[in-house]
Length: 277
Image (cartoon, rainbow, N blue to C red):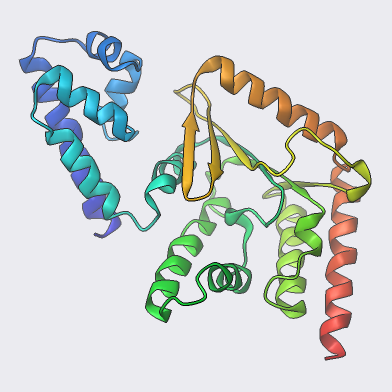
């Protein structure tokens, strides 16, 4: 399903939600209370600005007695997404965010990956997959990259562990290109990158990625990920704790200039390695 037709389908979802809510005599706030979201969120669902999660769609069906209509439509629209089901909502929210703060302990964040680096990751995690499937994954990953080059791009702050610089993905040439890309994006003031060096030792988010997204007209949301699962967290208390842990990561990371120097040094090591092979 093309992006335009998918958006039109979500707009239909929202229009149906509004119609059936009004037929039930409920305000947005009243429906929100019953499905455990704010009235403002219900309004954003109806305008196709934000997409509900599956459990919310199921509760809407229960409250409005719509016999599974919104759950079935949700499943159909998510199935047609170019992303895995657990990441589809996070990908939607990325496009709406005004600020994104991300931490990755083991790999370059998706928004900053070069085509060669991303391809190598997909091949490593899908060694028996057909090229058609790998190409589909690759296209979806690369489709996110222009977000940071757009004039209305969000403020983007990435913290990575030094592991990201040292694990060889796709060979020395690929790694040199990837690390040089990180530096270029930072030098062009499109992103801010910091590195947590090995010397720090234990740190607040050992082995746990996270992405904090802020919005102009909605509360911040946190995305975390495990094996084939992803969680969007918007409980204010939880978000506050995650933001505090991100502040601690900033405190132990190298300053931006020192981080770029370390990245450039690693890129040069890979470049020299590639030139001798």
